[in-house]
Image: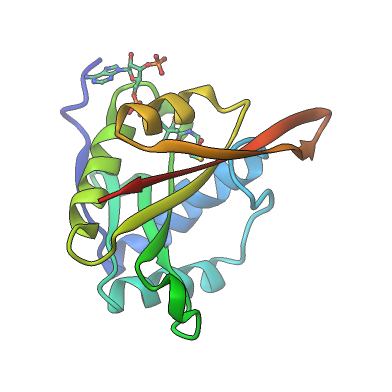
Amino acid sequence: MNTSDVEIRPTRLSDLPSLVVDCLNPVFLERKFLAIVEAIPVGEAMGYHAAKIVDGHPHFVAVVGDRVVGLCDVAPNAARIAAQQHCVTLGMLLSPEYRGRGLGERLLQATLEACRGKWERVELSAYSHNERAYKLYLRCGFKEEGRRIGAWKLDGVTSDIIEMAITL
Ligand SMILES: CC(C)(COP(=O)(O)OP(=O)(O)OC[C@H]1O[C@@H](n2cnc3c(N)ncnc32)[C@H](O)[C@@H]1OP(=O)(O)O)[C@@H](O)C(=O)NCCC(=O)NCCS
């Protein structure tokens, strides 16, 4: 499928309104793939992501013109968690119409590349019904480390929460 209309690049502060309104909140409201299953107030979500960008953490978007259609970013552990400063947690998503075009892999590889030299271990959780995400992570070198059996239960669906990680 043609992806020439999509650019993958580091997130700018000016991307944040579209990131939250066009991309993040609609995917939260799908209630299938992420821990958050309701819209977050726009100002709150923009503040959260602005802080990450200002701190210089890897934070990438897929954009079509001015519209954000995808995100991949990481959340470091709080400084007081001294024994886990070498680990970071990754999150990613694409707007529905931009899935299944290989954009997830491009976003993920850009983010992992930006993590190299900063962290030793990138961690994430995926739900067992989310086969596309699971396959992507395995293809990119993540290993399954364990499953929390039946720990996801929502809207009549019960799934395992799969813990995965990659060593950089
Ligand atoms: C999970 C997610 C980020 C994966 O991104 P993606 O772009 O859909 O997936 P990939 O990068 O692995 O792309 C592979 C798919 O694109 C297709 N594709 C089309 N053109 C391609 C290309 N040029 N290169 C690679 N793959 C291509 C592949 O055939 C494959 O399709 P399939 O999954 O139907 O077999 C995305 O589907 C998504 O946002 N899902 C909802 C939110 C979510 O699950 N977030 C992660 C929570 S853990």
